[in-house]
Length: 396
Length: 125
Image (cartoon, rainbow over all chains, first blue to last red; front, top):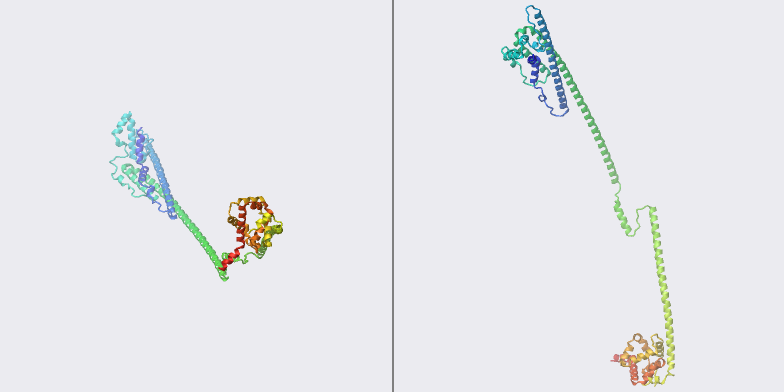
């Protein structure tokens, strides 16, 4: 019994679900198969978003497809088990059947694949049960490996695996994937049918119904997905169109704003130019004026020549003239006082000199008078002169 | 002996006596004693080159105008007798001093009175 799950798994791997899985895995549906976004303009971004959404939808669709295939396969397996049980119950009710056949609890997929494999499994199970030890069972398995395979290699057509069309290109459409799955499922079913022609007559209608129902469900799902996809694409396109329109409106508003600003600035420039032009005309209409600096230099030159020229107001000029007059008066008074002082000094000096001269003259006069008096005395002394002096006076 | 003395000469002598630089008798005597060994010409030159004399030489000549050596000697002897009697005695007691005195008076008279004559002589030539 330890080998029973392995056998069941081997049989299950060849189920339509497994075939579908292999087919899907063999189909390259990676991100690389999708065209890359080449630019970042709104259209390309929208396209990239649409592509991403499509990828997600495709993944969801693929998951739904696989899940549906699994459910349908499970349903088919359950129905097949039920039919097998019914058949077994019918066979057990017949008097010829003496052997009690126990249904394989974990071999649901065996009955789901073919009826002949079910019989073979029952036979193998009865043989294995009849053996006493596990070693004997292992020896039996080693000696009869064909009993534990899905089908005899001789019965299978050699071209059966080749009949499954390998996808040569990446499927980006969910309908294509679904049709591929259906084709692979059909191919698997044909292989099963070829492997067990005896059971084909019994199970073909059920399988055909099942396949039709699966195909119908696939179609329905695909239609729904296609509708959702188309609605999504439409929404995206509408959104992109609305975005484009909004961007165009904003651009148009910006353009209008720029135009209005340009018009406003040009009007301002024109007003400024008009004002400048008027000022220039006024300046040209007035007589030519001497610049202020030239006037200042002219006034300074005239003032340096002693002429009273002033740029001040009449009141300021009057005040300036009064102050200048007062200054001149003060200077004159000061000069007068200095002159008087000098004159006083000179007068005093002169008086002092005159006094000295007078004194000198008095002295001189006195001396002179004294001299005159002494001369008179000398002249009189001649008469009373000593003999010695008389001797000195004579003899020449 | 008639000796004419110009009144201005007496006045000039009186002014000389009243001048502040006029020495007293002691100084005058010492001065006389100091010049005893000096020649009369030198003494005449010293008198004439004195600043006070040279400055008033015209006044002096004008004062002695009309006088001769006798008048000059009278004026000098009078002054000496009046103010320097010791010098008069000294001159009279020594022949050398008397000679010197006379030589000096002659030299002064020649310089004061003969100038005009010399100029006239020069002019005449």
